Length: 238
Image (cartoon, rainbow, N blue to C red; front, side, top):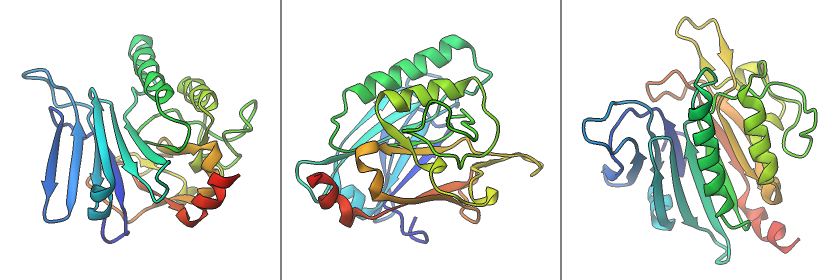
């Protein structure tokens, strides 16, 4: 986190159990959520790691099972709250009941969020949104990677419903800076991790790209958004 000057780092597939807050060293804090049942399996799991600055701005956090954790932060504008929702969606081959339960639950959480400032950091969503825009011009551009799958419509509909822009698809980059997942034999790459932001605040996001050298012992590549919070006051006045 310190090397890349991160305030918040989202992590999926932690494979831990329970929902807890854990101090890491003298600065960082880890908020994680997973299965809470006794003797539950070590599967799924999501977490957010907070820097010292993010920890001081923390308002509250909520765990929603093993796939969703929601964290709220204060911003420089008292009337604006930044909400980050870290997700780990069922893969495309999962049964429809699991996918329905996840997306219905996520939508119910988003609906309750105020429109002032909503950021969703989605890790391991596995929708493979792909290239092209069709009927979703307002939420995505033409800079995606890979082919579309069945989860694509669920994901795109959710973003369109809450007016969320998919950050990883609106900025042009080489494929190596779009791919967020790589197979174990390094022959297949896909863009299945996304960061979305409220359409109202899209101009705060200046870029989204992966950092290939960043490593936290996972087959996913770290994606870093660039935001200019100095524009926040201008955006809020429009």
